[in-house]
Image 1 (tube, rainbow, N blue to C red):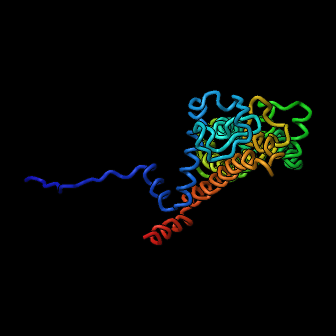
Image 2: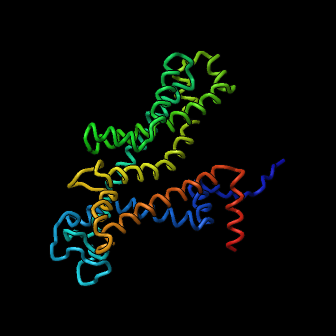
Image 3: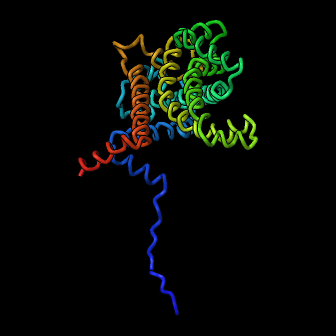
Length: 307
């Protein structure tokens, strides 16, 4: 007696990347934001190698050169500043500094704030309440005012700028992680791990932290735009990165005195700041929609409307 096995034609299940890309294609605004951010990241990563020292090389013959001029090299396509330095090259180099400072500040605040939030949420000892009071004190001051006071006292530098930005954004991750831990520590898998003799450190690091991390990553994507605006404001006021280094905010500050005669000096870096923060907000809203099953139907509606 022979058994006949039916022929099957298994199809490989689409991976997570393909699913996310399919959802991204259904939202054209989010797709445009993702493409723009990809170009900005590529320019910040490889652009300084391409332009070389053009961003800092003086060219007095090209002082206040108007944009869209085809009589000079391609780096002068967006014009030149008051010292003849090409704005396009400075935008590329400034993107590396701006995104680098923002990424360091967001990563530091997420790491330290998330760790403190895990401790404050799981433990009920005295240092848990001390951590909460620390977050309350930091949030009681306006973040920009606190950054101005600290940078004016310690002096402007890249290290101090990253530390100040990280401290001002840390309470957001601390409170979010603590709220998540307060709910997770009452679940059955935590009680089971505790009954099996697992130490508190193992429970927090092995069972709770992996569930809190996606929420912190989502918040960091939203907070990235806020940190870019804060860094640009501090650089605009002269308390950010110092010459000869520069960021987009410092470029806007250099061109504020020439808005009536050479508007392009401040316009292009201001436009870069606006488009980058707008793209980050659009992409974070799209990610929140994809992550929420109750809101994912919006992308299905967009697909039907596109047809």
